Amino acid sequence: MLTRRHFLAAASAAATTACATHPPSALLDSKTLKDIAKSSGLRFGNAIAYWGNNDGEGVNRPDNPFNDKTYMELVKTHCDIVVAENEFKRYTVQPVPGDYRFERANGVAKFAADNHMGLRGHTLLWNRNTYMPQWVQDLDLNATSAEAHLDEYFGALISNFDGQVYSWDVANETIDPETGEIRNTVFTKALGPGVMDTAFRIAKSHAPNAQLVYNDYMSWEKHSAAHRRGILKLLEDMKKRGTPIDALGIQGHLGTYAGDPVTGFTTSYDKADWLHFLNEVKDMGLDITITEFDVNDERLTANVVKRDQIVADYAREYLDMTLDFANVKEILTWGMVDHHSWLQDFWPREDGLDKRGTPFDKNYRQKPLYTALAESMAAAPKRAPLA
Image (cartoon, rainbow, N blue to C red; front, side, top):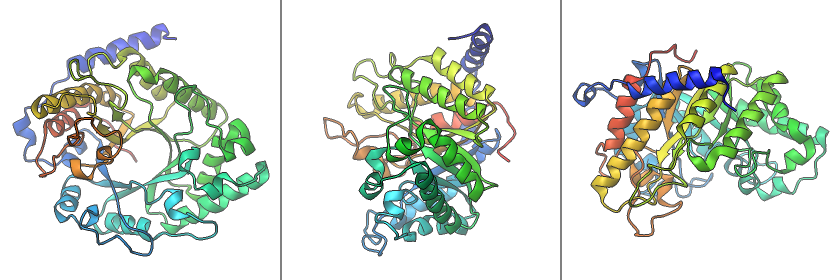
């Protein structure tokens, strides 16, 4: 429920957003996204994928992003942070018990180190059965053995990077978006509602100097109301119990369950509730990182010119509103060019056309979404950068 304080805060934020002054695009043309972000105290980055298995098979595939020199130069030019798409996840790192496979993760870490980029760690615990190795789902754990299991795994993953990772997504997507409750997994069964407390305490013991983040895909869209409420309850409970959490990761996958060929995105979002959500997170003293930004144009018009503009306008409104909060410190895209985006394979368009939900097209040309991203970051209020 919106209190008077939250209503006034939301109204103020809305007014600020509505009056946001975007610099002329020409002033931004000669700047990189990371430099534009830095001018507002933000940091900009991108997710990169190191394809192939841990024995090296497939690494030299021509469609491997790491072998796309133009793309990797684009990442180096525009980003000062990177995160691995799947290479740090358990199904990659430990697909079978007792066998750690860090080759692909180390490829991403080396790229970050060689190019003096910050490295985010995604993720220690994806507390969702769909994305756990089957052998993990089949474990028979009690509270003691579950804690020991997580301690061993977290320790192995964190120590592999020897302090290079400055920010860890300790837990990912543990809230069921339909119910707002913690998902039922092997770890939730063993540890109960305190599963997140245990995970964050263990992460803190192995990475005492890293930022510890809870990451999820709640959105400003209307279908996400129960998800937002569940996230706020989780964060409030963790803060009350003194759990060592520093930040919320907002994935920022826009449009996944929204959009229409005729109306675009015009009826799909709830500004007032999104402002309330952001104010609540700010009042808890948590920083925010937009961790996986892109726009799903699955249901939009086939007309590319119109579609690109709808995507850009939708993103600009979301970013203006969200970046108005000074506790938002970073923004990372989940792919910078269309043909290296996960969106091409998930929820494909019925007409078979390529999706266009990233800042650059398949020919590495800037799209209206690039302009929206650049202008929103440039217009964002100045803030103290993440320490």
